[in-house]
Length: 422
Image 1 (cartoon, rainbow, N blue to C red):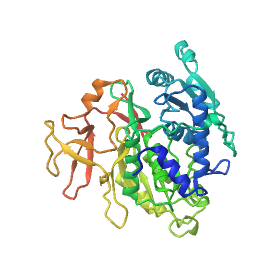
Image 2 (image 1 turned 120 degrees about the vertical axis):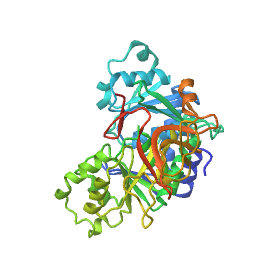
Image 3 (image 1 turned 90 degrees about the horizontal axis):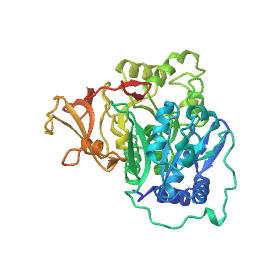
Image 4 (image 1 turned 45 degrees about the vertical axis):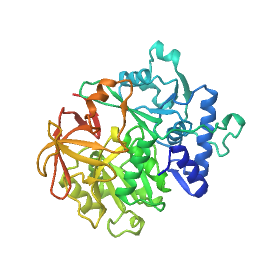
């Protein structure tokens, strides 16, 4: 595994310079691995000139696309920490994230400015707000001036790289601080579970301000040398067209999206299961909320694409469980088995439960965060004395190692894959 994200970007640019990494369907722009490296370095030059030191926080409020992806990777590349803001969060939540994170720079899409304004005076005085026009393509000849050249400082594997705010039962978001080690491990776990290679191409329709979009459909393709089709947002009417036109081999969705696709299945111009334009699709995966077995079955019967149910957390850099790919069995109603990390079911005393016994899911591995940002009480409460992360999810493991979720220690409302405090 790579030591940090800078190494992964540099090595992929060296090995597959002209291979595509990201495709933007709206503009048709294709970003190669070499161009990715160049743009990431250009952005770091800009951050240097803005005075953002290594370890400094860089926030952005953007839709999916070339800009947001390059910013996400550029901050880590320069030893900084990205703070992607939830584009559908309330104004108070956005202000809290900006204040609590101590971000000094905010890249902002004009189309999303109204979600943020008016800013409190303290934030307005502290933040450097950089317009990021999503209608503009990234420059084809990135700035190569000396100011854009990075010092060759060592980046620790355990240096923080990503700060994401999660909803909690108290309604106060917690800042999950993820390191290079966490993000690399999360991406490798996706590769392991789904047997990804450089020939695979993901369709990313989930926002990269969520861990699913950021790790599953950005980090995993980056680490495997694959590529990503990334529209600005999900459109049910364009979903299968994007997969067909750009030869996508897999996609990551949530149950809400699956239901949208099923509702308009009869309007699609494809003969699912017998259409050469879609023959390259290997699988779809579902996460972020439980998938009803009847919906999984309807998807597979309607679209003739295997649906892989999975489970992940922000705190674990996305996946902790996944059903294996066919022809291995996948069990409807189960998010699967552990890939790349340890998962057990424990009782209230921390003892591992026997198969079939309900308890709380504990996770341990390189993908698990070490701390909630500036929240030692939450950090202490989240870990057992021997280092297991307490997920808060209740469930059981069957005799074959498949897990089933039965509830939460403290129930959250889940709407469209979003956790909402009651």
